[in-house]
Length: 388
Ligand SMILES: Cc1ncc(COP(=O)(O)O)c(C=O)c1O
Image (tube, rainbow, N blue to C red; front, side):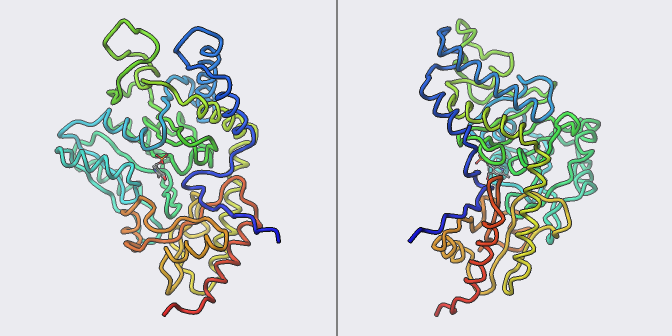
């Protein structure tokens, strides 16, 4: 008997599958060999061209004129750490929100222990949204060096209001760092228009690239200290880290197969059109929200269905531990993520700490039938006899 295909609804962790061209690009780069900036032979030059082209595609995708302002990292966590450790000093003040991921919470905790003042703006306990007014008020209480916040929650999909915030931060002399992990590739983002100073994102989620890729965008005039030093393939005579971008922040051998894959993914996204992708994703989320709302015993969390949102949907089932629901869904060939999703603060904000929720996150290759199959399986679970 043919097995039911697996329904993958954990794209907020990492997108799956990738476009066919991504698999081909990774394979070709690995077979070709060569290390960018490490040799003027044909393979080395080809690898360097590949890295340059992926950087140019990122700049095109995010509407930035100078591609050297995109620094490659191995994930969003490394990009966020580079931004925070490159910028902050003892005595600084940082404003953030109660909806952040541990990739922001934990480094900030290190700074807090070293005398950095960290202020968390509380999000609305129903929607997980912060207001511009609350953020501005928190920033104005005392001189603030940095505002760091995510664009969309990885747990509840709450899409934070960035419109106008970048301009305001620049007027106030506050650096704005946005964690775009849950929106990059999933909705149009114009970094120039939004006047974002620092933008961190993974290459392996909405951007559809391979794992082991990510980047930090740094606007002109933002002066960061590198936190990794070493060989960059140029200026090898000097014991000083190069000043120029992107080399200043890119020591060590690149993940060339990964970045070749990310380049292929960006070509795919540009050819498809991010507006199209966003429209498709929105339709899937609506189908999911409507379906879940019709199942008795389902509690839905986060912004109401009529608000613009990110792609993560969180729910619980009355009388069932989220971990148990995740286990049962896995047995029914549906992949979701349960628990705290590396974001304990956001669960505290919406009252779902410590058991957490079941998070469902469709992606570009999710079909309507996948959503329907998932909803049917949730119905099945609600009819299971209670465990003694
Ligand atoms: C909002 C948010 N920030 C940061 C991260 C960390 O991303 P990465 O796993 O690429 O380091 C994630 C990943 O789940 C995320 O959702």
